[in-house]
Image 1: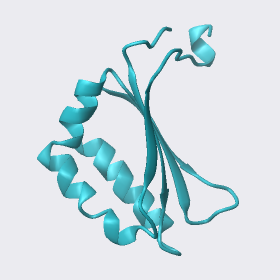
Image 2: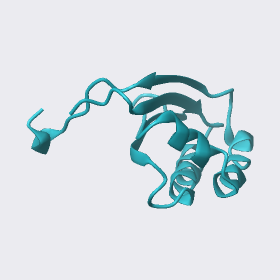
Image 3: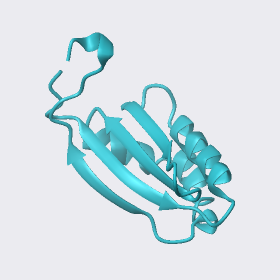
Image 4: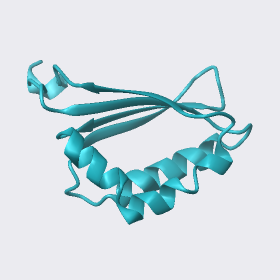
Amino acid sequence: MSGEKMFSVYGRMTALPGRRDELMALLRDGFRAGGEDCGLLAYSINAVVDDPDTLWLTQLWTDKAAHDAMTRSEAVAAVSRRVPPLLARQPEGLYGHAVHVGGQDSGS
């Protein structure tokens, strides 16, 4: 599948010691707050095996406009305001455009 118009987000968040699971639960709440038809095609929250405080996030959106609309919504903003007190440092991230999206059942 070509994803030339799809928008992608990759990020790393480092929780305060012992707060990773709380941060992970809050991030899940944030993704769910956008609703079913918000343009978010897929997301993953990845716990780092050898770093108990770090999470990597991956998001795939229909386009940048869908991402911007959801992240600016009040429901998502309310959850987002609860994230900074759980962080040990400023989040890091990159934005891009997916050029290929596949899976086991897609023949890709």
